[in-house]
Amino acid sequence: MREFHEAAAAFDEIGHPASEASVRNNLGALLTRIGDWKGAEENLLEAARLFQRTDATVQLLHPLQNLAELYQAKGDLDAAWERWQQLLESARETGYWNAEVIALCGLGMVRLERGDLEGARAEMKRARKIIHDEAGWSECQEACQLFAARLAAAEGDVLGALSVLERAAEALVERDRYLWATVRLLAGETSSIQDASRAVAMTKEALSTFEELGAEPMRKRCADLLARLEEAQ
Image (tube, rainbow, N blue to C red; front, side):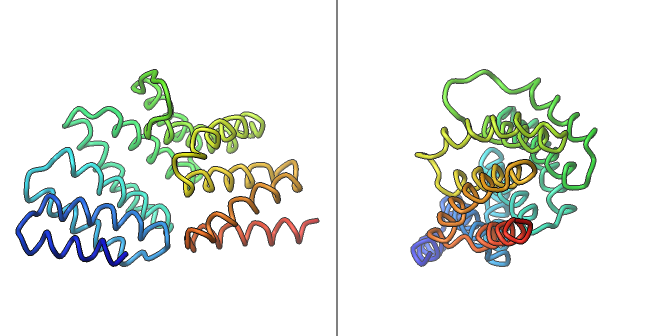
C-alpha cells in the first residue's frame, strides 16, 4: 500500500498527472477490495479528475468503472447507478464496446438488487447484442457471465446459474484469486437454495481466500452466510 502512495506522490511532484491517475485508480480498486471505502473513493475521484484534466477520455473509463463497483460494494445503489450510466455514456462516446458491455451488466446488477427482474433481463439483452465472440475470458465476458449467473438464480434456474459459475471459476483460478473467491461465494449463495452441504464447502473455500487477501467485506459476507447455513442445519 505504501508503494502506491509513494508513487502517486512522486508523479504529483514531477508533474505527471496521467501516471498519478493510473496509480490512484489501481490503489482505489485495491482499497475497495479491503473495505477502505473512504480511501477508495478519494483516490478514484482524484484519478477521474486527473484523467479529465488531461483529456484522457479512454483512461477515464477505468475509474468510472471502479467507482461504480465501489458504490455497489458498499450498497449505495443510487451512486452506483449514476456511475454505471456515466461509464455507459463515455464508452459509447469513445467507441469502447467492451466497457459498454461492462456498464450494461453493472446496470443490470443494480436492477437485480432493486428487484427489477424485467429491467435486468432487458440490460442482459442489450449486452448480448454487443458482446463479441472471443477466445479466452475477457473482462467484459467476465462481467456478462457473472451477471448471467445472478440473473439465472433470480429466475429460479439454480442449475443454470451454477453451471455458469463453475466455468467462471475455472477461468479465474489462475488469473485473479479475489474474483475466483467471489465466484465461489456466489456459487455458495446459489447452492444454499438446494444443497446446504455443498454451499458450506464452497463458501469455506471463498472465506479462506478472502482471509488471506485481507478482503474484509467479502470475508464478512462469507462468515454471515456460513452462520445462516449452520443455523438452518
